[in-house]
Image (cartoon, rainbow, N blue to C red; front, side, top):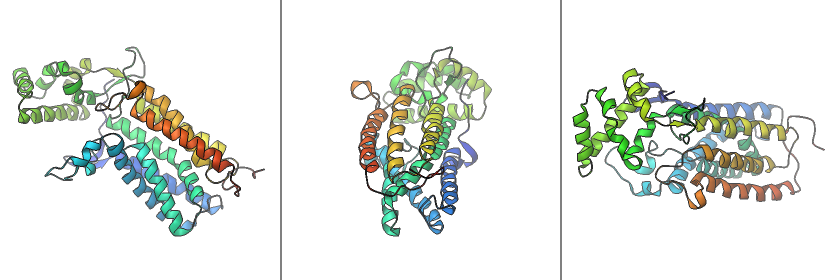
Length: 346
């Protein structure tokens, strides 16, 4: 099956409109508010009801800023020096270039909790626990949005794999990784009204002509847009050129989202010392992410780091170590257990 989902719920003009990705963030924040609100009403969350909306706002800002800056520093520091005449002018602000990094979002979230706790004199570790409890739901929606966008694609699967999917976004990797396939797009651009001769001429000029390179890139965008718009002729011509891949975004939605959510809520059946749930989030998320990266393509401009690990696995390994240290330390603190939705802690 060729992935042909439209990233827009409502496309107003050009790249402006209501995207599923933005709605995924909104859904995560709404669910977090509802969960904390319901628990605060029965004194399971030590956050005043009147402050919950403010807390969610702090978390949203922390995730967005941390997620973007995390991508810039962890994956693409060159964006710091990229400036353009067009909006948004600075590469760091061009969220469509690379997007967000989950590890950075978590750092931003932790800092937001620390700031909010200091301002309102709340238990910082208890806030950590709550964002850990709600976080997997946001991750679940976010990974579904990644799938809809056709980004963070999986590695090549067995040709007979029943869940395999072909992602048209692969074509953007071809100019640098598989230039031979660019010429094979002749039959595809023909469905868009460009002759094979013109396409091949553009590819030849693109080796030294910047304007030709821009035209080639724009044509690739037109191909992707045509598939998303349901152009059967373009889709049929492109399909044989694409590689069948694991839908790694769906694996992550299940593992980093639903599975992690169930694990943490089962552990939280009893009240726990503040910080225990937060540290367990770091531990279990890291393990699930390290496994999941085996099915996900590494970033094209990075590839595999030392010893064949992806950048995501290296960051998750560091997070796992931090989580284990914090778990040992916080679980031994003399502090009153908080939360829990089952019988009292013994």
